[in-house]
Amino acid sequence: MPLSLVARPTWCDRWLGLAVLVPLPLWGLLSLWMPLASGFDLPLREPLLYLQVALLYPVLEEIVFRGALQGYLQERLAGRQVGGVSLANLLTSLLFSLTHLIFRSATTAMLVFLPSLIFGYFRERDGGLRIPIALHCYYNGGFYLLFVS
Image (cartoon, rainbow, N blue to C red; front, side, top):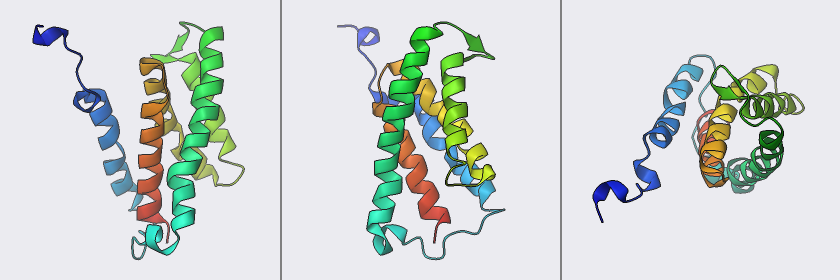
């Protein structure tokens, strides 16, 4: 079979690679305004808390927001876009950000908007939740490791 007809593995995906790199400079910028965690030992010191924020919450949030809500909106708003982003992804990301106001600050709610759009992009592109969940776990895990003492 010619090489061009073989599906590229996920790890060769340039958009996924970019999505993995995106938080690195953003975390660097955030460190100018937020103090870094004192020992980067939250996973060892508070393993249950870290597992909640790095694994449990991302899985649940992706099932609810990208799986159920965005899936529903995709069916109802098929093909509608705003600035190159599907209306389903945009509305889901707005609601996702607003729900963070319940337990977090307005700044945090704003900061989750861009990652939410990224998760939504992969939900629509691949039709599943595997990549959005993995990215969400990575983003949350990295943020809590770097900024929560």
